[in-house]
Image (cartoon, rainbow, N blue to C red):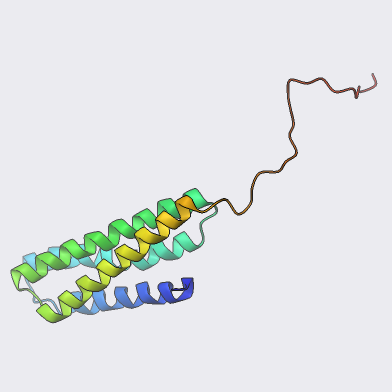
Length: 139
């Protein structure tokens, strides 16, 4: 899956979460769980976009960790909605499966980033501080 395809996939996941939350019945429980799901579900795509703009491998891995956490949290809130019968079960199950696949893709991406050699190794030129230079600055 390309970066652009995953950006689109996480965006579609966020839009589906928004639609599901808007369709929840009015009530205290649905409001609280819905807000949590809305926050987590929309955060997946936003954080993936941030990961794509990471300035280093370390930053990329950290931001992808957030994507993983938010997708996993989305699964939790969807599980609660399903267990409470607060939403269309088929719709919520489909979203839960999508969140699960996003977690799997994200974990695989993190593992790949951790084991792939650096793309820009350090320069072979060294600046040893302990050796004296033959070059002298005139006074």
